[in-house]
Length: 168
Image (cartoon, rainbow, N blue to C red; front, side, top):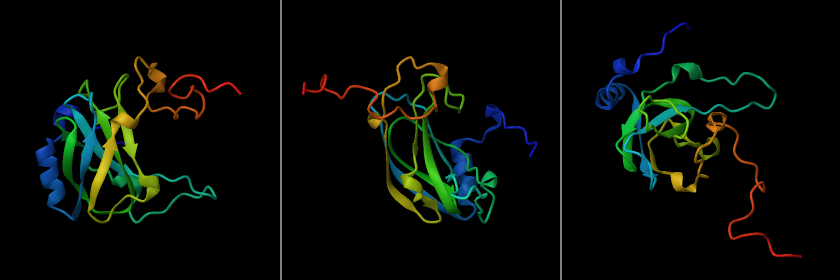
């Protein structure tokens, strides 16, 4: 696995990549990205859903997860989308990145979210009505570089909206 990542300028365009996906066995993922302050460079990516197994055994799939890397789908801003995804029997997640700097990876200050539907999302059939809502995410203005992609905030760590709780 000593493949070099493909440099960005060598990446196929979304149209070329979609045509390639459609030339093989594929399904469609469609839905909507809701975001009031996203840039016009959203990147949607479908990736294998990795489950921590109970006994610590390696999960087994028909094809190894490392082989399922569909090309990213670029969306020009929030709104509805429909993308072809290679058919894959395993569970998947839909990652959405607000790629403000255009490097194709989550960077400091960029919004990133994953729709996993508790591991019920699969690329073995068409998926419609997928809703990715960035407004439901906690805002991270000026988050330190270590915070992007870090663990979610601890419940109860922040005071509830609307001020302090009523006195007992």
